[in-house]
Image 1 (cartoon, rainbow, N blue to C red):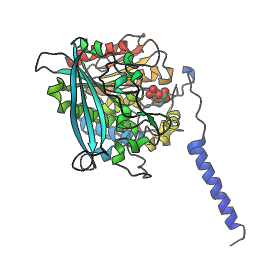
Image 2: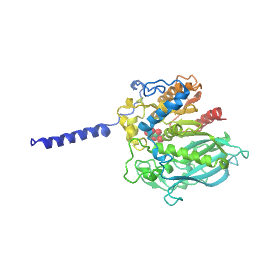
Image 3: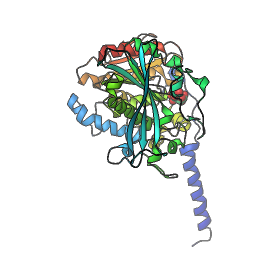
Image 4: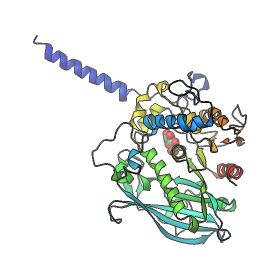
Length: 441
Ligand code: GCU
């Protein structure tokens, strides 16, 4: 062997490893584009063309063939498979424990609280994982059941309403380090502008909410501190196509719905009339929850942006590269393969909207929320229309252009662009109630 062979091979290996690293991680994320003229050309994958090229022409073919195919593609490449949560694989059990109730808002409604308990063994022990669920139901004639919004909150149930009896989370999780601090009394009602409980009660809707970090903390490496502690051991690496936090929260929304089904008589909620709704990262979550769990009768995304309602192929505001670098724990690891080549993604987000079909689906943006790309969110809603046509429904109701701000447009696919910044406010909820009135009552 020539005497330079070994050092040359070593150098070459080092060089290749460095190049690999550069291409995979170290390429700096391009600054966000906010210039419509600089949006690159793209071709969207057709919701109605199967991977093998066949055209989908009937509702039946959509439900039996294309929907499962798309769901699988989204699992493998974007959100991850929740295989370990499925019956047969699940290594833990679920139980629901009812806690308490009392009248609220001068008797206009009832507040209930129950717990989802995840545990191993025969009975919940100190390793059990508990999630508090807060429910507000309008006061009704005995025996009647109402529709409900089911939605995760960002900062704890006690921040959604100032009521002193709402249970506070045991841990409020930090979003940059795997650490937590206790909840504080002064936080009560701090997010009440996002949760107009009295308004919802007056409109005849129940509201079911839980703190998303109670399901699993929203921090890279936090998965061993939420329900996935039952699935993995410390240091164990999950597969590239396995569920990450968004898919875990989405699965958690389904558990909340199970709880509603379980206590439906006590809560006075009709579990066949639930609306899954979420804001921002939790809007990405509600869209995915609506896709994987068809019990949700209506699916709503509020300002969900990249990885939610916004088209991935449009380089406007947040991009796939940016989101995967900033939040490596949200999507499955396969999604990172598209950081530098989003056009090779086998799906785009209009197909996620279409996974709600034939159920009503609603997308909302805010005029100043450019990071979430309002136009890209509108275009997703628009491009999902072809699937709804298979079912003979109104689809996007003939809408072709983004509407003026604050106007709710569409048909069984609805859309509005609220004046103002990133947030979920009473005007958004008003549109959601109107939309649900139209489709559920
Ligand atoms: C960040 C993130 C968005 C996300 C938002 C939120 O801005 O980049 O993707 O939607 O946080 O959840 O508030």
